[in-house]
Length: 253
Ligand SMILES: [Zn+2]
Ligand SMILES: [Zn+2]
Image 1: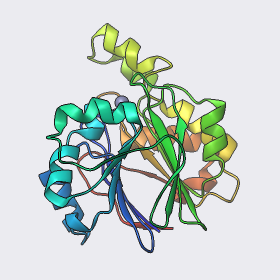
Image 2: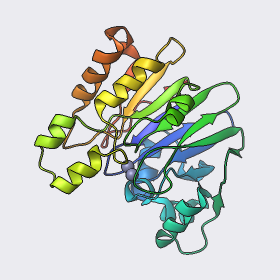
Image 3: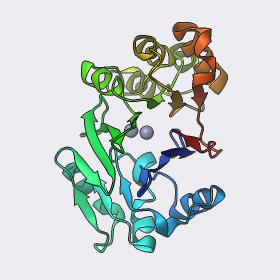
C-alpha cells in the first residue's frame, strides 16, 4: 500500500491511501483546489480517487468534501450523523454512503473504532487490504482500551501527537480553549502518544507518523523527541512527523 499525508494539523487534514485497486482520502479539510494540487504533486489525479472517508464533522476534516465530491463524483463515506452534519457543505447531488459498522471499498476494508473527542461521533479507522493494516487515530483527548486494541492490529500507524502540555498552558490560547484541548475529549499530548507507543512497539510495527500537531503548542522536534524518550532511541528510524504545509513523502507499506 501507499500512504501520503497531504496535510495534517488544526488548519486541515487529509490522508491519501492507495492499495492495489483502490484510492481513498481519509478526511478532506483543505479546499478542493488545494487537495487537487497536493495530489498532483504526488502524481495522483483527483478524479482517480474512489472515495472520501470521514472521521468526524469538524471543519478541519470536512471543509473540502462538498466541492471535491461535486467536481469528481467522489462518494463520501461517514457515520450517518457525521454525514448529517456535513449537509451544510453539500448541494444535494453528492453521493453519500453512511456506514453502520465495518465496510468495504473495493479491495480495502474499513473498521471504524471510537475515539474520545468533542464531535459526536468521532472515529479512527483500521484500513486493511487483506494482508497489511493501517491505523488512523487523531482527534482523541485520551487513549482508551478500544483505541489500544485496534492500534495493536496495525503495522503502520498514524497517531495524533498534538501538544506539549506546558507549551499549551503557557501559550496564547484563551483559558477555555486550553481546557478543551487538554480535556479527555480534546487532543492527544506528545507524552500520551509516546506512552501508548511504548506499549505497542514490538517489532511488528513498521512505521509511525505523528500527526495533527499544534502550530502554537508543539514543534515537530519536540513531538518526536518526547515520543523517542519514551519508546527508546532504537526506534528513531520508525517515527516520522507530518505537518500542515508540506505534503509528506509517499510511504510504501
Ligand atoms: Zn482535527
Ligand atoms: Zn476534531
